[in-house]
Image (cartoon, rainbow, N blue to C red; front, side, top):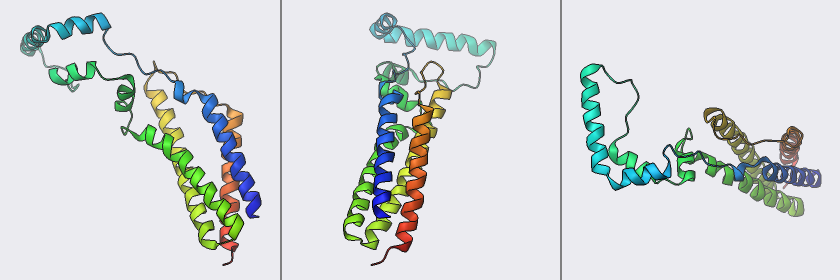
Length: 194
């Protein structure tokens, strides 16, 4: 049974790698900055004038009617945000900043480490190795579901950023193989001796 789980785990990993390389997750362009480069250079040349103009415009509009409930960005934050690299802009727009790259790293790493522990269990049949591998399989599944959900939510929120395109067939193979691996690993760990 341990060898069957090992082979299923390898099939899951192969389908996951294929899914990763064909989805375009690593090749997504970052959202375009709000300003044109020429206007950014012109506003960088005269920051004091633009701050004074913004202050006088806000003072004039304060007399007329109150501003909407949007949170205004300070002049310093606006100047700093102008030079943010596209990856930082994308990470700032995530629900929990840094979650995407963390999950992008954690999901495959949990899977690889779990596969190594399961290989160790297959060779020496130590029950502790089976339970460690099973725990890593649970962590891998949780990280994978969170990663997929995070990407789907980010694609819905940002209309100008193309969503990753997942092959439905590969996604089904990866998910089904992961579910079967999880089930058989649990049964094997429960019945393991030693």
